[in-house]
Image (cartoon, rainbow, N blue to C red; front, side, top):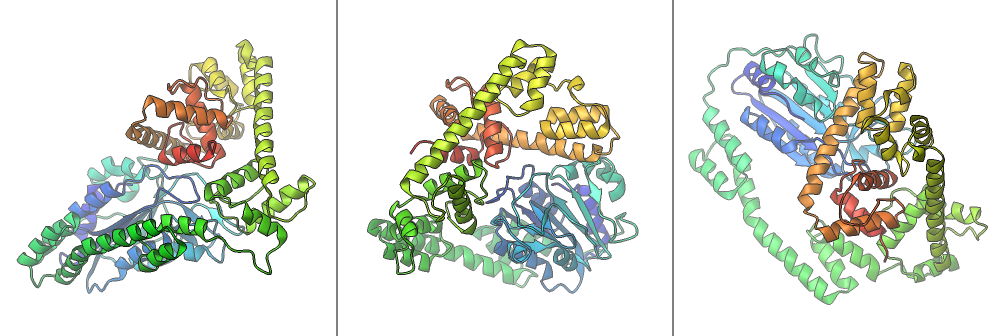
Length: 572
């Protein structure tokens, strides 16, 4: 989310020249247990703020711990606080009174644990308060949901900004739409009127007009400019040049500390690689434990833990039931466990995220499945039950596809508008849904297919879930009850699809890789059409169905996460 240079200039111009203007930007897009967020441009925003004179800290895809440490940069000692800007793009949860910005490692938090997996916005706003002439908190998210336990809701709840703090909410792209008016000297409210998806939270101050004042000459401006250049470059030569010019400068201490970190980095990386190579050569539980003791957050820590789990499964003990011991003997790999969790979910269970870890929820889902199938409800699987799960899912997918195709033959296959609409009413995301929409209106939803009335049309749009459907709603009800939400969702969908298109292009897929993807979609029952390496509209529709079924960002394009899921779902 970008903030226009005019707003930044207004903030800086109003602050005393000797004050330090601080900014924190976080772009959490790749969540462990939630759909990706598109449109977060953390690097560009950080550069904009630095050019405008802000001392800027930024991070991408931060877990809860690093996120809290980054926010702490707002509370460093500052005798004359300047302007404050914080931009948080990602997922939010609230309980009706407090809202938390969630770390990228969040996994189905509840009311008791949400504070450990995120940062409360009330704290962020308190840390921002006191900036002169004020502070702006920009919150960017979209309409997709992340898993959580009862007592929490997705999204940003009620906020009470302290005086001098303005809070702006919207999609990660909506802030950019205010740039034109801000650059023309408009107030924040006037600039926000350029995009209905951008909203100003009530409170904070009576008048959110950030008019620049005359700046007092700053005797330390050169020092601050040199530090901004050094911290942006973040290299050994840059910090050495800063210290050569300002050996007793305002930022001499952090410059020396960062220099020491950079000098230690090669030695630390070399030691990490050396210990890891030794652990791999030994390939024993003791070797991987030794690596993790020395480098708990090392470059190879995740792989070490996975290999350690394979080498050192829990041994049957006196308290281990025969059923648990029998499942242990299967020696299921993490990928096999994740596949079992996905199958339980497809069969109506609630095993939690498909992470390969059989926790309390997975055990409950296994027990429920066993009861429904007349098996001993032990919560642990046998080899025959693993095969039975896979067979049931295959039959379920085949039955669903057969019913879909039969209804298509009865309705849409004839090509008449009435039959096409009848098919879409029953299967809005079916195997032939894209073909039906294309035949109805040349790629756009048929306006006649949308029910009359604002609320009825909005419900229809929700079932369609496409950019074209939101456009239809806005064409019909430009000032409707859901117009602002429709514009925000439409902007999010367009940005997400474009970002996914670029990501797929960057993958550089060969024809053989494309054929492999199509084959995996076929095996998953998604009906991608011919396996020929050509990504047709049928292929795109199959990708959308797969992404929706796996709780991935639904774009119809291949992201790295989608590729990983398809490869993990394939035959072993």
